[in-house]
Amino acid sequence: MVGGILENQNSQNDLNDLVKRRFDELEELNKKSVEPYAYQFDVDNNSQNIKENFESLEGKDVSIAGRIMAIRRMGKASFAHLQDKVGRIQIYLRKDDVGDIYDAFRLMDIGDIIGINGFVFKTKTGEISVHAKSLSLLSKSIRPIPIAKEIVDENGNKIIFDQFADKELRYRQRYVDLIVNSEVKDVFIKRSKIISTLRKFLDEKEFLEVETPVLQPIYGGAAARPFITHHNTLDMDLYMRIADELYLKRLIIGGLDRVYEISKDFRNEGIDKTHNPEFTMLELYVAYKDYEWMMNFVEQMMENVSISVFGTTKFDVENVEIDFKSPWNRISMVDEIRKYTGIDILNCSKNNLLNELKKHGAEVDPNESHGKLIDELFEATVQKDIIQPTFVIDYPIEISPLAKKHRSKAGLVERFEGFVLGREICNAFSELNDPIDQRERFANQSKMREEGDEEAHQIDEDFLKAMEYGMPPTAGLGIGIDRIVMLLTGQPTIRDVILFPQMRAEK
RNA sequence: GGGCGCGUAGCUCAGGGGUAGAGCAUUUGCCUUUUAAGCAAAGGGUCGGUGGUUCGAGCCCACCCGCGCUCACCA
Image 1: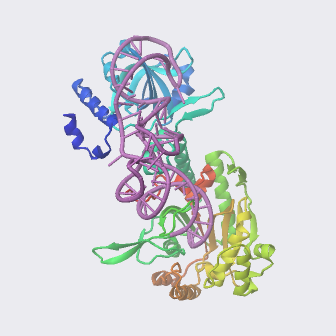
Image 2: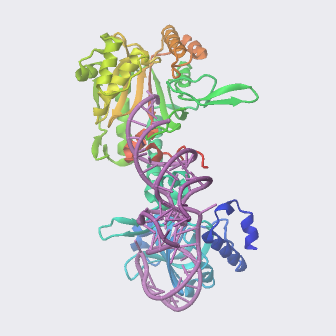
C-alpha cells in the first residue's frame, strides 16, 4: 500500500502529488524487480574527460554515473543529461539496445541517480554523448529537485532559466544548491584548494600542524563574547574558543618553534555579510621572529596561494582589480590618522577623539577607552580607503593586550593588520613574551571588564605561568580564512563561502 | 536591535477588493539522433500564520513567523 508507506514518512507533512507519484513509481519498480537503491556501480570515466578526449574515446565503451538533470523522451528512445562531479553529458537510450530496462527508465525522473555503460558518440547536431548499452538505477529520488533548464548559447555562455534562487532555501538546503547551481560547487572546491595550499606552504616551511582545545575553561586570545557550554561530569562551565592564540603560544614555550592550527572559532555576536558565529581561522606562531619578518611571510604566503590556486595574483573583486603581488604597502596607523584628521592620536585628549569621530558621522560612546576610540577613528577614516593589500602597522597598546611593546615608539605595540578593499584580512604581532608585562596587561583588561567591557580579556593564570617559564621572542599571525576565500573567489557574503551558514531555526 | 523590502503551484514569477494565473517541471497519448525536443490533452494552491475591516480579502489594516538589503553592534 502506497498510503501505508507514505504514512511512515517524516516527509508526509509536505507530501504533494509530485512526491506521491514517485512513491507509486517505487512500487512499479518493485514489481519489475528493479532495486531502486543500489549498493555500488563501477565508474571508469566522467563527463568532462569524455568531452575533452572525444577523438580517442569515440566508439569506445565507458561507464559513467550521475544524476539525471534533463530527460527528452521520444517514444522508444530517449535522451537525458547526466550530471556527475565534474559536469554534464548527454546520454542516449534506445529500447532496442537496453531491452526491458527501457520500460523501467520510463519510471525514472529528473533527480534520480543512474549508472550507464555505453559507447561514446556524437549526435547529428554535434553533441558528444554516450549511447547506452545498459542502464542501472542507483538511487531513486522521491523529492523533486528545483530543476532549471540550461542552454549554452553560440558564444559559449551558459544561460539558465528559472534558476533556483531563493537564498534562504539555498543556504538551508545546501545539498540542493550544490546539485542545481554548479557555480556554488566551484566556490567550495576553490575554498578547499586554498586551505590545502596554505597547509602545503606551511608544511614546507617546517611548521607543525597542531590541535588545541575547542572547549576552554578560560577563553582568550581575542576580544569577543563567547558561547558558554557545560560539562556534566566535571560539572563545570566551558567556553567555545574565540581564538586558539594562548594555547599555540604555550606550545611555542614548549619548544615546538613553528606551529599552526586551522581552527573553527566561535563568537557569540551579530551575523552579517562578514560574520558567522562559527568561522575558520588560521593562526601560526614562529619562534625567534618579529612582526617585520611576519609581514614578509604574509606577502609570500598570499602570493603563493594566489598563483597556486588561481594562476595569478590579480583578482577582480566588485569591479576593482586587486593585486596580491608582494610587496604590499605599509603605512603607520598614527601617521595615517594624522594625515586624515590632523590629530596626533598619541598626544590628544579623549575629547579630541570624540569630536573627530562625530565629525565623521560615527556614533560614539564616551565610556569607550582611549585606544578603542583610536581604533574607531581609524575605521571611520583611513580603513575604507585602503584598496590594494596594505599593512597598517603599530597599534595603540590598550587595544593589543597580547602584543609586545614597540621597541622605539612609546604607547604603541609591534602589531600589524592586513587590509584589502577596506576589509581586515589578518592580524599579527611581535608576541608579548615578558610575563611581568603580560600580567599588567591582563590586570588592565580585568579593570576594563569590571567597568563593563564584556569583551575584555579574562586573566589566564596558567598562560601566565607558562610564560614565566620563558617564552622565546615570537611572531604570531591570525588570518580569517572565510574572508580570504571571499576575496579570492569574489563572493559578496561570508554565507557564500560557508557550506552551512548559521540560520534561525525554522518555525 | 532600527529602517526599507519580500513571502502566490515543485522552480521562476504575474495578479493590488468580485470564480487563483503563466512558463518550466509533472501526468496521459503519439513520437528510435533530440536538446529550453515537438504535437494534443490533463492534474496540481491553507496566496507564510493569526486576528480584523468588508456583502465579499493574495489584495486593505494589526500583530506574529521567516528571509533579503541596509544601518548599528562586532575582528
